[in-house]
Amino acid sequence: MKFNIFLFVALLIFFLIPYCSAAHYVVGIVNDAKDGTIANDHRVVLWNPINGIQDNLTDTIGVNGDSSTNKTYMIDCEMLLTPCQIDDELNVMVYDIGDGYVSEKISLIVTDGGFDIANNITLNSFPDSFLKSPVNFANLSLINITFNCSAGDLDSNLANISLYGNWSFGWHLNETLAVFGSNSSVLFTKSLPEGHYEWNCKAQDNLSASSFYANNLSLNVDRTNPFVNSVLVNETHTCGDSTFVRVTCNTNDSTGIENVIIEAINSSGNKNFTADFFAENDYYVDLLINQIGSWNFNCYSFDKANNSLNLTSPDFFSYTNLPDLKFLNLSFSNLDPFEGESVILNATIKNNGCSNADNFLVGFYNNNPLFGGQQIGLNQTISLSGLSTSFVNVSWGAIIGTSNLFVSSDLNNLILESDENNNFINQTIYVGAWQEFYGNVSAVKILSDFLLKNVSSWGNEINLNGNVFMTDKESEIDWLSLLAIGRNLTGGNSIDDFSEIDDILGMQDFEDSIYSVFTDGGSPKETDNLLIHNKVILNVPIINSTNNENFKTGILWDSSDDLGDNEYNFADKEDLVFVASINKGSVGEYGIYDYEIKVPVELRDYDSTDSETIYLYYDLV
Image (cartoon, rainbow, N blue to C red; front, side, top):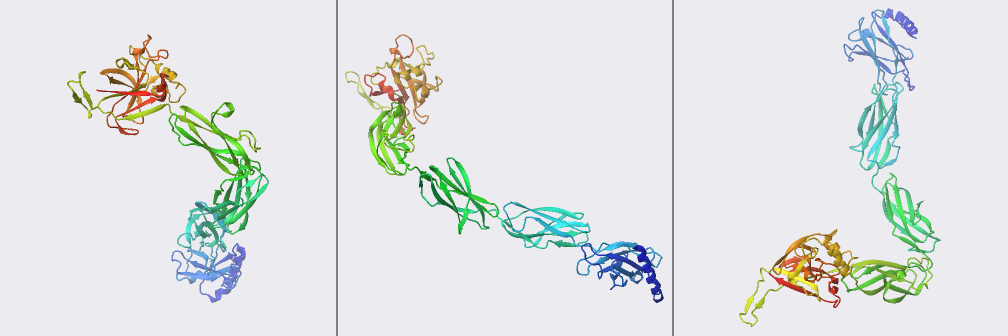
């Protein structure tokens, strides 16, 4: 090809010499662009870079140019304002005539042959832009959106790919990433607020030729869950295990609902059903209720961006066709009664079946009636229509300790039920083994001798000190022989005392026994020295009388009753005295007063001659 050009130029110059005094021609070929665009009629420019491109010459490529030859240009460099000379370096390139097609710049050296042949030029093709993801009309809920763009260039001179979008300040360039070669892909990651957007990518080569993808793509960013307004069943309940119900989910979303799933849940498990569109915002499923018991229906709503929200229906029940007697609860009118207090036991019973249950017996018991429980009050006869509820109650006198109270129905087994094993309910209640006493002490006294002479008044209401004592009525206390429980006559430890008191009072099985309340593993939790009848008694075990530190209760034993073992024991059953120091005008659990003392209720029965009465004493210092 170069020989042909040389021959063509030689002939051309031969014919032109007679008409030209001097000339130096630069001749070259411009190949069509690789995308098929014809090089003819595009234009080339020639200039000397030393003089600048403002001093240039141009020619039209092809038959309409000076060469009159297809894909060829011819320029006389002697026509430059600064004519070319031998050894000058000249530049040549195709420039943009309005369609964007250009070429790379080539250079040549002027020789002394009268003409020079430039290297071939190829018309540059535009790169192509491709949008891979997100797909058009995508609905996304991601915080960060990744845009995948690619580019191809037939000339293998890719330079960069740029992302454009309208998510802030209108349509604009967001980011540009460098690429190379003939094919390349890039990822742009953007954090976009919720909204509807358009986007595109521009591919550009190193000659600044560029192109967008043919059409902008759109996307919707939606991070808001759909609304699930209700999950409703068209029946209040069903009877039996072969009834269809319609479950309707009302749901809506600004971008539209993609899918609605209704999950049916019962005691056997769960199963999902795809809901059908009904009207407006309603989606429904017709379900077979094939099991007796409780059901729930959970509606999962998914919008176009895959945001989801769920809502569960209230409990739905399918009841047996037969009667089914079941207690719903057993409650007490007083959860913290004292011994002997009247407590009302209240029970709620329901017929969970669809058929009537007529004239059956209900009874209350202390402990399980199947294992010898003692009946409380009399049996009661009631009737219940299908799915109805009734209430029964009885009065019970509280007993110290833990009581397991039962109420049972259909005592004679006259009602044919779907479930015969749920006809009772039980509840435990604990009645404390202790009772608190509190009050004020007056110290105003009249003093005289036995002849009622030397009469005088004594009172010390302000600085009142002393103790209050509580014992069984039958106890005859030698006040000067009192010792701390847990100590023997010589002051040594007697750790069995607390459990022996429990055995005497019948409190050994109580959770608030003497042993549990006063000791930690047999050792007193706290001790103090008390002044009683002008005698200091050491190491008296004490506890808080109620809920604070202002009042303490201790235990003493009367050593004058000892029969020779020098300590308190079960066999001798020495008299017991509970003691509390006076603390004038102090705050206790029940108000402001002078003393507060805590004693076991069974102290009254320490000597069973009289099991109703205990005595209170006090001494003043």
